[in-house]
Amino acid sequence: MPRSKETTAVMTEEWTRKDALFVEPRLQALGVPHGLTARGLGPMADAERRSAASRAAGVLEDVPLVLKQVHGNVLYETALENSGKEGDGWIVGPGFLGGVFAADCLPVFLWDETLRSIGVVHAGWRGIAAGILEEAAGRFEGRVSAAFGPHIGVCCYEVGPEFKDDFASEFFKGKNLNLGAAARARLETAGIAAENIGVSSLCTHCCEDDFFSYRRDRQRRNMMAFAGLPR
Image 1 (cartoon, rainbow, N blue to C red):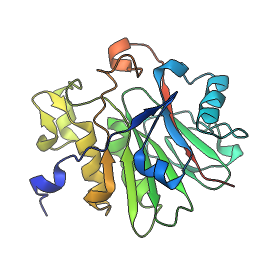
Image 2: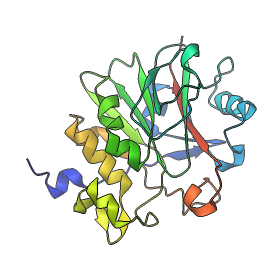
Image 3: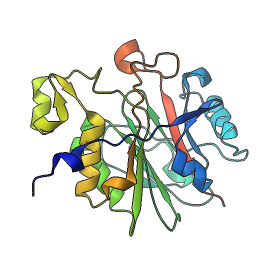
């Protein structure tokens, strides 16, 4: 069934700066330790900086587990033995922090009303085309919510004509791809209600003081999106 313009419109839900992190309002209200690191914390390839990020979220004893990201559709349950494996997301259970790197791609969080686990996903155009968002949504039941953190906006994301093989024309503005709208449509198709999906309008490319951007800087310096649940 064709989607109406109303269901494909991206409803924004703004993340706010809280010291060294950007935080999402619904997750903050639920008391979930989480965040997207601001540029001021430095590149997150460094383990000590990742530790500083978890402390900024109020978690003193745990450091976010991270993966070797490959722009695919593989997710892992958080466990020490999975740290460093190839993949692009976590399903986080109690007592762990899961983290993914991003520097233009979408940092995505998913959770259901039971809050027994939370998904933390790195979703670039390749991962979205490969179905990582549908894979993540399928790990939850009942009333599922999602949040897309700051990412490169349609204002700055010019792409080649080959992208039209993977994304419908409605997600383009001239040569520019609206990655957030395309990702949102994927989650709606996977069964998540439109009103439960929040999309940040903050553009990592535009906001140089706050975020790294691979497309702008041409350097591999990443923020980290992470979340965890109490033990």
